[in-house]
Image (cartoon, rainbow, N blue to C red; front, side, top):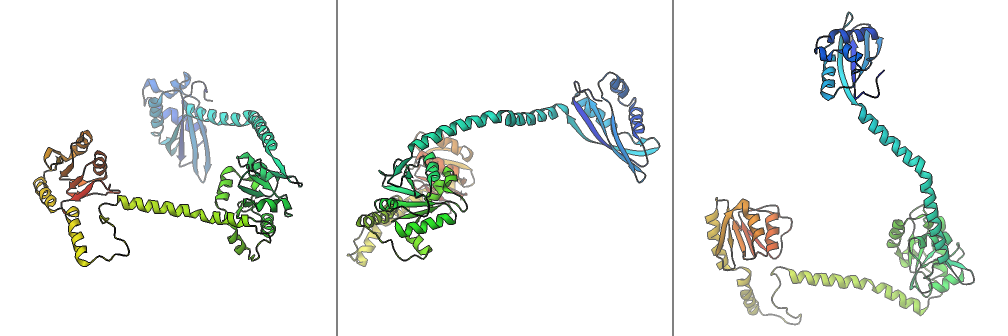
Length: 445
């Protein structure tokens, strides 16, 4: 029996013998064949007497003229000495009259096993013994929230329809099925919902829908579909939103409610879906005006797209003509050539091409870089490996760089940050994004 107070490690080994052997034979072989092998300090008999080594446990079975089993030995030594004892077991080659083989399978750290037990037990204690208190706290919190939501519910008309406090004053409302749906929406701060109370839609709902932008928000079942068809016939609704298939509005989470409302569809599409051609009987002028405003809302998106397009044209690099020509003017060929000649020196400056080619040729094969000012004068010549550091330390006097190296994304980003005008290298690397303000070129360009 191992001493649980002092045991640090347990050696586990597998044994196989070409014959029938029993536990006493294996224990005797372990003591006999390791005696004197490791010296007097690690003699197994002495170690067992002093309690440094636990009881040797052997489990062995015989079948078909062969024996197989396992060996476990508790040890209170440190890692090194325990590993030596484990290796000594593998030197045993005979058990009784039979040839045997012993192989160490693993060495288990008892303290690690205890730590795993402590962690697992602590988890169970946390769930089992503290669970009751947690539930009580949650119940108290939920009860308080429930009471607040109940106090916020109002009732509309002679039918006392459950509704949120903002239904009367809000320009847009949600029409749901029952009181529980209104409560769940109030839970997540949606206070403009009103319940119809079933498939029999009250007249109050029809009157309310004629004055507001209405979204029918129903369950994802057959009942929700029937309520939508009823509302389409007796009320003036504008959008339809459905809970996920098989779910009710009262059971939805905040994320599911937001997703369902974002996926609402216009009533015209619902009419086509259910093949309903007859519009509701009572269509007031205020309803038509409201629907026209709803349809005009996408114009904001188009205006924003036009602004983005204008901004993109404004920042496009030197590709916009310097002046716009009205659609009613027709520019003669001579004027077009004249305009092109005026723009050409700006887009393709020949003198600039000549001056930097000389520096590119001089730097070819040197793995060096030259930093230039606005007058195209050399400020400094450094090694390419130091170029990034030099650019970061530059105080604003550097206007461009010519270097014998690969143009990388890092160099381009530093050049853009420092406001460089041009960056000329030997080769172009993998550039994911090239800033408009920096002209990036290679010696082949």
